[in-house]
Image (cartoon, rainbow, N blue to C red; front, side, top):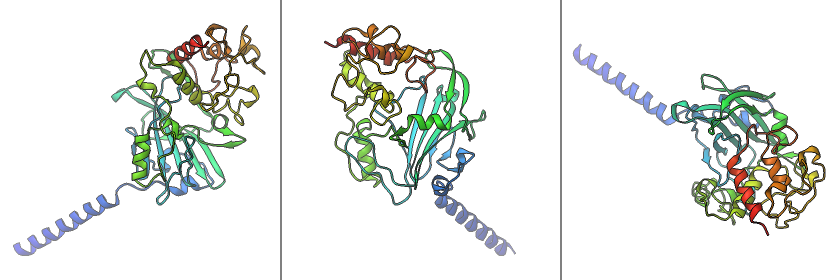
Length: 339
C-alpha cells in the first residue's frame, strides 16, 4: 500500500510538473492577428493581446518597444510606443523616411501621466494595417487600469500635467485621428521614420530579423531629451516642427492649403515660413504679417500660434490643451538667431 501510494504521488507530481512545463512553453495567448486584420473595431484593447500585463505595459511576443529621438509633444504626456509584426514578416527600410509596414502590423501608443505607482494610463491609440489600408482607433483606460474601451467619439479627462497645470485632456475621436494621420487622402503612420529612430534600435531589429536593413539617415534628428543649453537651436527647432507640425503642414497633408511646409527635409526657407505671408490664417495671425520674421520671434505668426491655447489661434489644433514652453523656447531662439 505504501509503495502504491508513493507511486501514485510520483505520477501526480510528474503530471503536475509536465503541466507547469507545458504552461511555460505555451505562455500567454498570442497577439490576435484576426482582430488586427478583421473588418470590425474591437470593443476592448485586450482583444488584441498586445500586452501580457496591461498597467506595466509588458509587450507580448512579436511586440517591439521603441522610442523616438524627438517625440511629438502632447501636454507633457509620457508615451509608451510599440510596433507589432506578425510572425514571418518584417519592416522594410525606405531611406530616412517612414519604415514600410507589412499588412497585419500594428503601431500602439499609450499616453500616461504620473510616475511610479502614481502613473495613470489615459488612452492607447492603435494603427492597424489592414489589406485596404491603415485604420486608426482610440481606446480609453478604465479607472481600475485593467483595460481600455474603444472611444470612437473621443473624450475628456481632467488631469494635472507634469508642469503642474490643471487641464481638460482631449482624447481624439476616430475622425480626429484620421485628420493628423492623413496624407493625400489616406491614413498613414507619422512617427516611426528612420531619421527619428536610434540607429542602435534599428540595428537590433535587423539582428532579430524584424527589419531588412539599417536605413541611411537613421537617427538624424537630434535626441530632444539630451539637448543642452549651448546646442545649436536650428536642428532642434526644425526637428520639433517636423515631428509636431509637418504631418499636416506638408504637400498632401491636412493643412497643405496653407502653403507652409515644415518637413525636416524642406530646404527652402520661404517654404518653411521665412517672410511667407499666410494664405488663410484668419485671426490666427493676430497682427502679424509673416509666418517667420528673421530675428523677430514676436513678429512671427508661427511662434504666436505655438504660444497660445486659444481656439482658432493655437497650433497644433489637436492634441494640445497647454503650451509646450520648452518647445516654444527652442523655436523662439531659432528665429531670434536668424539673419
